[in-house]
Image (cartoon, rainbow over the protein chains, first blue to last red):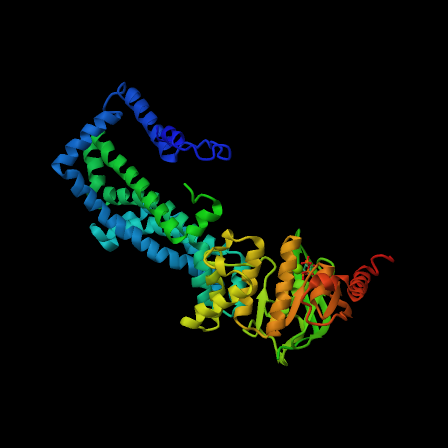
Length: 276
Length: 259
Ligand SMILES: Nc1ncnc2c1ncn2[C@@H]1O[C@H](COP(=O)(O)OP(=O)(O)OP(=O)(O)O)[C@@H](O)[C@H]1O
Ligand SMILES: [Mg+2]
């Protein structure tokens, strides 16, 4: 509608102005895709026994019930606290650690193998051990989230440092920059896209870690909502926290993308994605 | 002040190709002197060691024998007495043109008001006053190259080392930058050692031309053109220009033509 109105109001230089066909905005495509999935899910979900599956409208009703009793919000708050703390700690430690390992030969040789091994660590199996050390409460949940999120962030940062063009480092060297300045003013900004990618990858792992922690330590938060409703064969309610977690991950990803465009605008500009 | 001397400088690279170790003698007992305030061009076929010579002089690569001195002091690493202009400008992509120039100055320990003022002065000198807030990818190739030159000039080095500074540019941009470089040289009297593939450029700009081959100095040719050379178009028309150009051409091609 807007397009039509605009073109009607624009008689200026119709010869030079070619009517450029604007591509469909991204959010519209995403919206259409989500709508299709929800409709299909609704149609096919209704044909399944409600114990074995559910469908959007039933989940929405369950969401409403959980929301008005306030159970959902307290559970969400309970989950978010260890999640955010563990995730933040993972960034705070993972990035410098990755810079260190990537930047210094000795650190790479001494610490690299632990990080590589740690990424593949079967964390679920280690939860009982963590409980022995840290108890059943808040601390152990933070630790589980931290351990799951740390390694992708650290490894990505490390790989990013390795990929920094030698020529850029030589620019620093030729102006007699000390190693630490080269690390901070050249390696770090050059590595930012990798770091941000690691931080994004870690969102998914941190969410999974949070639920694992809530299943295997004190049952609490959104994890508790999942377990309790599953035990009551209330599949619709079980889907509510699952969907909330996925939506949260999408939101967090969007937020990280936003931050990335703020702290590293040149990256999107170079790639030509800055106009979207 | 700013005399660069190469004394029997050798540089050997070992590289592994398909599991076999190869050795490349990039520099083989190279000796020459660039006098204070002089402009010397390094020319020669690809792979003859020109970039390596500059890198050794800058202190980015250590030599395997011999030594490079600047005003008698041996080069053991990078220093503020030398400024490098890289072949592809190598600007830091996250910094604006001005910040790129400021980066070099900050590394020299310059802070506060003079930092910005000096950087602006040198961007002005290379004709980029209006584009100082653009980031490298918003600049054309020639503009980037000029930022690279400003960045090296700003730290006020005694010696400017330039690796094919105008190599990737179109003819017109190249000519205006050549004139600009001569102008800057006339004003600052810096010692300049630069690499080029362009015969004309070597003759137009340099006082002496060093022809290199296979890592050795093949011939050193004097350019009998007086300074200043304000109009390069006129210089091109002089018999001295043509004669010197032919001499250099012969030096590059002899051996190759006969055998
Ligand atoms: N880092 C390196 N490792 C191994 N060999 C190298 C390295 N740098 C240069 N060489 C070799 O040393 C020789 C000289 O290289 P150099 O880059 O100095 O040549 P050049 O004269 O600058 O050539 P061009 O005109 O193509 O830039 C070449 O044979 C090259 O293969
Ligand atoms: Mg070269």
